[in-house]
Amino acid sequence: MSTFDSVFYGESQSISKPPCFNGENYSYWKIRIMLFIQANDLTVWDNIINSPSNPQKQGEILVP
Image 1 (cartoon, rainbow, N blue to C red):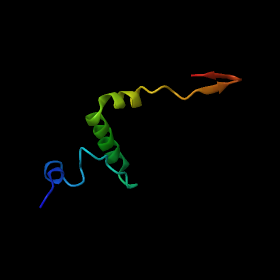
Image 2 (tube, rainbow, N blue to C red):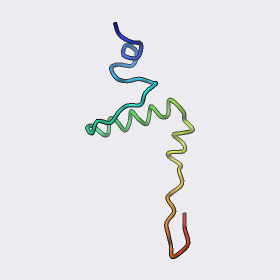
Image 3 (spheres, rainbow, N blue to C red):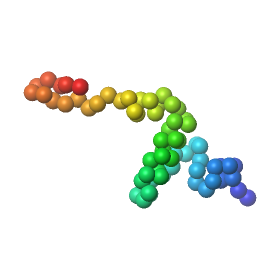
């Protein structure tokens, strides 16, 4: 008997667990993880995209 996730979303495509990267086909995984994050919480995706840059040291002063 199939589970709801495997019938509705296909094999190993669940809305409750993120896709696992197995080291192959990165471009496909990248799209799937992007869609997974956006579907669960768009605010999180906005924070990932608009995150501040890492501060750089310029002399003794941290510059954003």
